[in-house]
Image (cartoon, rainbow, N blue to C red; front, side, top):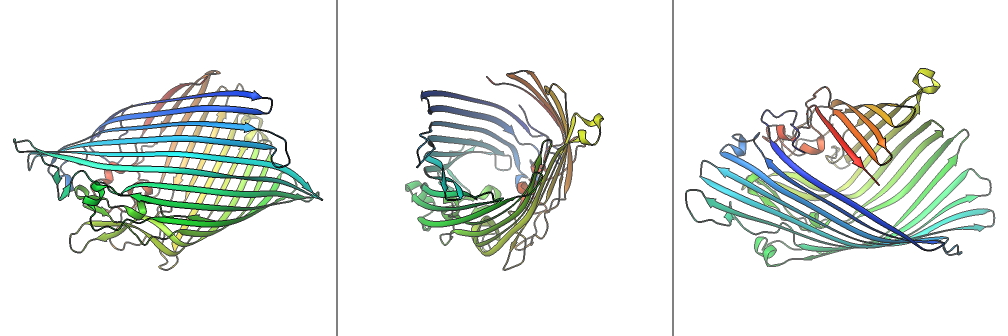
Length: 516
């Protein structure tokens, strides 16, 4: 494949990429009530990029070449065992062991005419995960009540390493150097880290007699341990930074209930206590990128986040129609806001970012989803169905009254689908409407506020044969210029990267897939 053109950029950045994915699974039944399954998943992607749109402007005013050579690899293997002993302690048992490794390399080359230099920067990230899970379930009758009990545990160990290296070459013949803009390469932006996460849970789905109520109490215990392992490279780059270990435990209760109404309707409610320990990159990050005049500083005082969540909703299902409406409210203590923009350092002018706790915050909203076939309105519409989805969420810092920047703006999606009687061919017209982000404070400095937008997409699917499918689509049909809030959050209104970060204009895509 090649690049999408950003809808707001005049210049054309160039990118060519190749990707390959493969998946294999082998299952074996060693007995009448058991199955052993092994699977392997591989993904790789390589991309060559030539950035042209920002050359000669802003901090790239003297840059004549800016290119990238990126690779991404992911491998995962797993072994699962499903067993149905039919015993009182467990009717069904599932055991899962897995391992995953991710490697990402980003090589950036930049040439500056003003100083006649070339800079090569290499970023490498590796993460390895080993995990084990056990899930057991059984059904028990106690008196007039019927209980479907589930219990189990999960354990995962994650090792994360990251390294940045760079080399600056004088194109006029000078000696190369690894000291660039005050940084002595190689550097690590956070220490090599190992995290161990464990959880044990128990839940019960209870129906008493012929009651329409279903009660679902649950309890989960979580353990989190962050063990940073700074090496000489990290110590040399961050001599004054305190490395923080984090150890946290939490017991989280949960209570859900449903009530079976008439004619396919049901109501539900839920309370849940939440918990999130500080991620390793938030507690110990020391990222400094002079090229972009930014620095992310660690927060050794970062606390674990806890929450109290409430949800109420209504569901309806009959053949041909499904409907759901839910409203939710979550109250947070020590909400973790990742890499919040602090503004400019008064001494150096560098833009600072730091993950921080917001003492009290809440997030609330509502979601609606409706899918229905249209044959009930007219026989001429037998082949059509409509899907409507609405999501509105607001997050607020309760101390300042300002909106949480990490919460996306409201969104509505409407889709009209036509499907041939054979179901081999279908076409869908989708309209997506997104509101602008509201209530964001400009402190410590003004932020870019993209407008709301609407885009229209047309997609089609054709099943040529049971294993072979053809997909095609025309996206952003009206060639709308727009930005997604998550792509530009924290940038100023005059940032030269804004045109590049705009979403693609009108484009088409086609793919052929075979599964056997």
